[in-house]
Image (tube, rainbow, N blue to C red; front, side):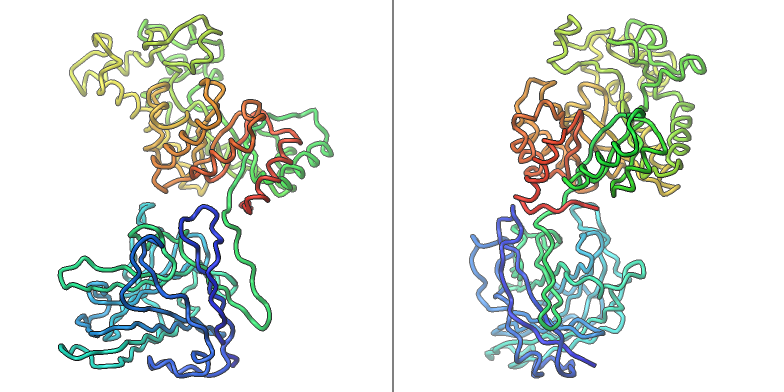
Amino acid sequence: MKRLLLVLVLALPVMANAQSPTRVYDARRSTDKMKIDGKLTEKTWKEAVPSTEFVDIRGKDWPAPTMSTTMKMAWDDDCLYVGATLIEHNVTGSLKEHDSIIYKDNDFEVFLDPYCDGKLYYEIENNALGTVMDLMMEKPYSEGGTFIMNWDCKGLELAVSVDGTLNRKGDSDRAWYVEMAIPFDALKRDFRDPRLNKVWRVNFSRVEWLKPEGPEENWVWSPTDKVDIHLPSKWGYLRFCDGQSVPELPHARTVKNWMWEGLKRDWSDEQYSAHFRKAFECGICAVLFEGYDERIYRLCKEAGLEAHYWRWTMNRADLLDSHPEWFAVNRKSESTFDKPAYVDYYRFLCPSHPEVAEFLADDYLELSRLKYVDGMHLDYVRFPDVILPVSLWSGYGIEQTSELPEYDYCYCELCREKFKELTGKDPLDLKYPQESQSWINFRLDAITAVVEKIHKTLEADGKFLSAAVFPGPSMARKMVRQDWGNWPLKAYFPMIYNGFYDEGVEWIGRSVNESVKAVQGRAAIYAGVMYPDIKDDFEKALDAAYGNGASGVSFFAGPDDEGLERLKAYLEAHDYAVSR
């Protein structure tokens, strides 16, 4: 059986926006048989080049560790091998039980993400006694993840040797060494073989208690720029090299870009195919269609793009004849059934009717099962605008410096009864309804309950669900009673149409930043931009969106071919890959 030999460790700045450079380790196939004894005496280890020395987890501006730590890696057909050298003047260890909280001792830690997605990764820790704690993370703690302690690295071989004496006070030790063989079979996910991935995200950590009472030191191979090792996007790269072959590193960043489109049924197959090919080639990944046409969806998918059905939710004029009792009522007791706000098509439903959520969930589920539909996209999942974007005021001849009663919903009899049961108050009797947090929350929660019902129904059927929402949760709550920061979806498209709010493109970044912070890693934020409003500052708008953590951009009313070419050039210039 062929074995592996380690080669040079490089420290390359491959993460465009990272404060600290991301480390890269190139490993080659071993040339001899490995004996796991903690002594690192095989030819493989002798010829391997040590990693760069570990640094403070917080990065380059923090003091260097007082003792050196380096590691090496190697692989063969069966295992990934890790060898580490930890300089130590007093080698100690106390924990002897498997899956003890090992970092309460001085320890060495290995983190492996073979699939480079940060969604499921492995952690192996050991102390100088060779006691092991191994676990699996479903995703980082910062994204709501938790550890799975009952995972064991089946077949793991680990050994420790000490240059000195273990647990003897008063003498002077020199170092301790860790050697481990990690079977690839133990790292399979959904029956996928990790050996098929030639590049992994990995990191290594050393916890050192210089003082018994702490605080502990955190020394790592690839710094994460904060005291949190569970940030896979900041880990280094391991490249599995064989012979002269060196796998390419992933792009500095992967993004997913979208377009909202209406259906042009008068377009020929050739026109649509050319349009979709152009979008695909220039960095668009998915299309959100307002409506459904099997032919167009098929052509979209044939070009390599995802096809999602964009469907209005609470604004449903199609139900006027069948369910007039479902429509929302304003503070003047006017129903959107016959007196819609602003424009004739603003026919919003009341979310408090239990039949509404049931109907909508069934409606979305049925549509999600149509041929070629990759997902459903909620729109108008809110109340009518109690406050319009400021640039629209003049068009309606209004100044909404306060919540006007004709635009304030829902005061239907059912909502009034439910709110009175909760609080003992009739919302029509509230002197300042805009200041009543109970009344505001009642309506926020009503919309959230509808979303949760739709989400639960589609999730049970394995369907993807996203939503177009107002920019920034704070604006959404104020303007349309939409508390989307607390919804359960995995993707949100805040419609950051800066022209609507008389804002420059830099405002896109501020809105994205608020949105990203609100979801705390639970969901993707795709910045919705109005293409005509950003056309003159296209690259600045993309900087604002991507630079503040957007997972991608979604374009409305475009982009045209010129815009698509600019998108392509931008992605190439920034070394961004697109999600396919």
